[in-house]
Each structure stands twice: as C-alpha cells, then as structure tokens.
Image 1 (spheres, helix red, strand yellow):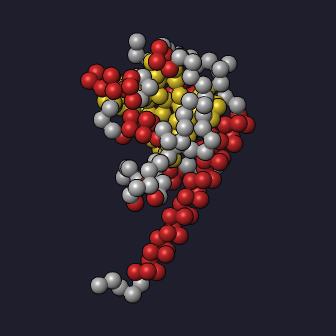
Image 2 (tube, rainbow, N blue to C red):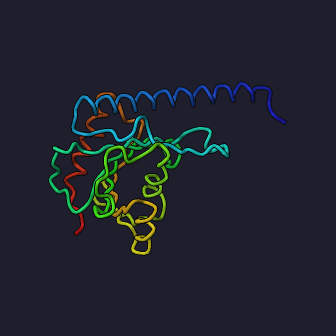
Image 3 (cartoon, rainbow, N blue to C red):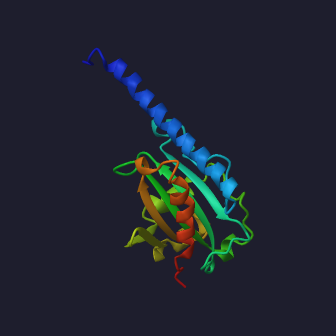
Length: 202
C-alpha cells in the first residue's frame, strides 16, 4: 500500500528532473553560442543528438545529450593523422555512478568518410556515438587523464558498416557538478585542443 505522500513525492521528483534538464539546456546553449563566438569549432547539428525511440519509458526522458563539433578547415591540429576527426561533448545523467560531462575525439578512416561535411550527422545518430563510448565495440586503456580506445579487430567490419569507419576514440570525463560558466569553455574547447595533439596510431 502506498503512503499518503507518494503522489507528492512524484511531483517533487519531476520538479527536480525538470530543473536538471533546464540546467542541461542552459549548458548546451552556452557551449553552442561560445563555439560560434570563438570560431575554432563548428557545431555539426542544430541542438543535440539524443535517443530517438519512444516505444518504451526509457525514451520518454532524455539522459544523454551529445554535441558534435568539427574543427574549422583552416584550423590545423598538431597531428591530424590519417583520419577524419570529429569532437563530441556528451552530458550523461544516467549511465555512470555520477552525472558526467565527457569530451571525446572520434577518428574515422578517411577512405570511408572522404567528403563528409559538418552536416553529415542527424539528431537520430546518437547510437553511432553513444555505443563507442560505452559498449564493447572498442577496447580502452587509461593514459593519464584520458582513455584511449581502438576498435577491436573482430569489430572492424561492423565499425566500417554501422559506425562509418570509426577507428579510434579518445575520451576524458569530468563530474558534471564541477562544470560552471567560468570553466566550461576551457574544459570543452580547451579539452578538444588537447585531444587534437594526441598521436594517432599509424
């Protein structure tokens, strides 16, 4: 039997959820506006990439929000390597022990993605970015504050077919509660700059 205050607790819980989502929205808008202002990174989607299914309850409330960026064509990384590279910032409220902001560099086989533009992604492509971060497609190893992962040999054909020739992901995570308006740009865009310097395995 439910206690008399169960309904009240549900209402309070949803107020917390909506307040959290409002803060996430503010962070997304802030990062996208700063990207335009700074000009070093181009946003590849309007808004964010998200889980697009609504056939069960898990799709009724977003918990992962992915922003995708590409360096401006005239911005030269110290080591561009043999790959086409995109950068993401993921806000995740659910899949870890705490809410995290993860920045990552996705390196693709240039032979497969040649000619891609910043409009290549759509909001429904979340799984193509989420899976490499969290599922068994890639084998990760720690390297200081980073996790560097390469597509497993047995998964290369799947990566070519379903993940557009993804070869490597380098990522770093931060507690979301530590992100403020004062440090968000340094963590995200400064973090992208640092990710761009990391050597690509030949």
